[in-house]
Length: 432
Image (spheres, rainbow, N blue to C red):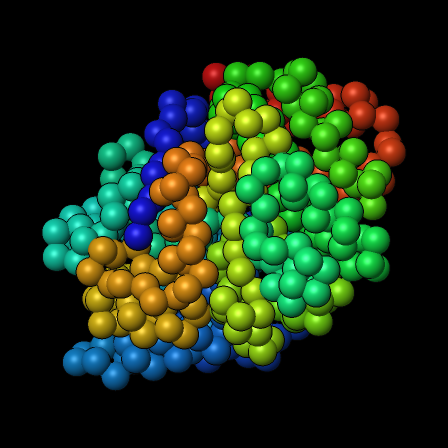
């Protein structure tokens, strides 16, 4: 497993969690049946990943079956926004979930600053020494020299493609230039196939935004997430114009709610949509939909729009974290420590088609191997995802607003970008 994180000097978020969300009691997903209370062997693992429920419950049983083990039982939310709001509000109280999923980088900082998370630094050093945990992955969970999470997953953001569609219309394999990608898209559209799946939601708006900006100007991407350039600056405008051009060509399918579309990827599985830009964590769901990796689908890194900047791609790594305020803190830490054992990691990777961040755990996934080879051959530079790379006070509202552009790419561009910059200015003016 190779990984590279770009350390930055971004100023961390200073607003408290309670100020961001208000107050609430952690009662479980709205409208859901009562969640089983923590027992001596099982803890609820709160998350916004309902598609992983079977896998989480299965690995939870593995954890519980081991000597003195503490298991997990999935407590999923169907909405990322609802999940974040409830967890943030309860995080510094005894009602905080004992174990929950979160995000890396700037998304992690407010929870750490509020004292909401258990410190895992001593465990991390053991995982690195004993299991070969990649320190670059773990750095995504580092705040002020301390570590606050264990990698639940690590993913490259890739373009999955339907091999049957590509073969049917004579497109061959993965495109190696932007021009070839656009040519393939034109061929697919001419045959009534939507070239690219397209998503909207409170968070999904940033997916193509970060891709176009990275493909045009990775330096500008780095500067933007740190507040060093404006959303109205020339590089951002150029990336938005490139995005609009592809939209105007009709290469995006009808925008769908991302949570629904990803949990049941019908259009991609049936071949009515040929390509899907998403984290490699989605592969398990594609397999569950009946698709076979290497036969029915493949994956590639999106080639740069501007060849002069070289190949760029997004990575994502999401932690499982432990509450510092729940009465089950020690049992939760023990469960995470067991989860990181290589024999357990092998089972988890098999359940969800993931690639472990530990070098002692080898992958046999043909898609992951292919992508890893491409990253090495093209010297692809990996960047932390927008959602984690910029403070959540910016990422959340801007991502939501970018969905408006997806639904209406003809809206006046500069007023729209000014609205995004107003959000950024409001945050950075107080954080600096």
